[in-house]
Each structure stands twice: as C-alpha cells, then as structure tokens.
Image (tube, rainbow, N blue to C red; front, side, top):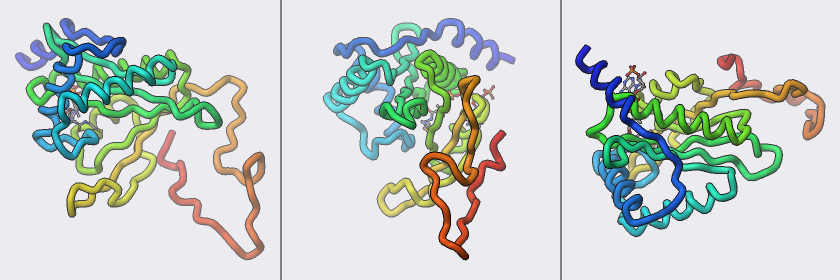
Length: 219
Ligand SMILES: CC(C)(COP(=O)(O)OP(=O)(O)OC[C@H]1O[C@@H](n2cnc3c(N)ncnc32)[C@H](O)[C@@H]1OP(=O)(O)O)[C@@H](O)C(=O)NCCC(=O)NCCS
C-alpha cells in the first residue's frame, strides 16, 4: 500500500516531454541515466558506458531525426532531473513507412518500480499514434523478463524470436520481437500471407514453404 501510494505520487509529479534541443544540461542528465543503466548491465544497446560526448552526439542524432517528424525521444523528468527515456522511430518512407520501432526504453535503477517505464511507453505510443503509425514493433533481450512484462502490460505481443541475435562477448541471447497493431485504415484490404497479389510469387511445382512462424498467436 505504501509502495502504491509512492508510485501514485511519483506518477503525479513525473513530467514527460520530447527532446527539442540538445544543451549541456540535457546531455548531463541523459548521460546520468544511460550510464547508470549500462553500468549494471542493462540491455539498451551500449556494451560500454558511453562518454558524455558520445551521448551528446547520440542526442544530436535523435534531434535531427525528430525534426523530420518521423521520430521522437521522450524524456521523463521527476523533480529536477530526468529519470527515464525512450524513443520511437518510423521506418523510411515507403511500404513500411507506417511501421514504428520503440527503442532505448530505460529507467534509472533508483527510480524503477514506480510506473515511469509505463509512462515512457505510453508517451511513445501516443507519439507514434500522432505520427499516424499503424504498427508498433520492438525488440527485447529474451532474458529481460521485466521489460517483456512491461511491454505485455502495454498491449504488445510476441511475434517471433531471433535466436542468438544479441552478442555480448562470448555470450549469445535471443532477441524477442514484439508488436502492437495501433490502427488500420478503414479501407485497408488485409491479405496477410495469402498467395497472390502484388509482390507475390508462386512455387515451382512440388515445392512448399513452411507457414511457421505464422500469426496464429496474434489477435
Ligand atoms: C524495463 C524497465 C524500463 C521497467 O521500468 P519500471 O519503471 O521499473 O517499470 P514500471 O514501474 O513502469 O512497470 C510497469 C509495469 O511493467 C511490468 N513490469 C515492469 N518491470 C517488471 C518486473 N521486473 N517484473 C514484473 N513486471 C514488471 C508490470 O506489469 C508493471 O506494472 P505493475 O507495477 O502495476 O505491476 C526498467 O526495469 C529498465 O530500465 N530496465 C533496464 C533497461 C531495459 O532493459 N530496457 C528495456 C530494453 S528493451
């Protein structure tokens, strides 16, 4: 009960905003979060603790991407400092341009278990929704059960597993791929994997393809 009260209070005071400038203070605060996450082995894409200059460049990349309108980095501030962050990024314009990847979702180790991860994911879903995304995707290390639980709580479903995809030294970990359908245009014609249609091809006689993995696990 005390924990829930604390969580609720934190949720009230947490403020989400989108990266709109890359100044020294933002670099310092984001570096603090990323460093703390990476130092305890967090699977967020850095094998070594990044330098402050590295984070400056990384944020510059996000800022540039955001100015195209096809990406955004959400920052979650509690009190006077950033405690959590995460990004969304659309695929390049084209057939997959409505697909958005959620990435780099992390909460400072001292601020976990208080709803901030959920706030970040909800903000990213809102950002992608406003962009017009139809389908959200993300990848999470197979052994990262806490993050997988968070994504499931946010409506994501597992659609596949990339075996041994994440390499950390000699160690190999699965990457679980998850997705959430946000919307489909009312006039969308759903073909799934049915034979025929644009981009299709037929099999030489006597040949067959495996239908697995199929979408039977997805609603
Ligand atoms: C994963 C991470 C972002 C979760 O952040 P968090 O602020 O602790 O998560 P929240 O408090 O918002 O949890 C929201 C919900 O997610 C689920 N959840 C989160 N962590 C969980 C855990 N360890 N075990 C079970 N469920 C968990 C729960 O459903 C939880 O709701 P509840 O508190 O009502 O039970 C955080 O642990 C983190 O930064 N991990 C390191 C970086 C990382 O692995 N990022 C993901 C990369 S793909």
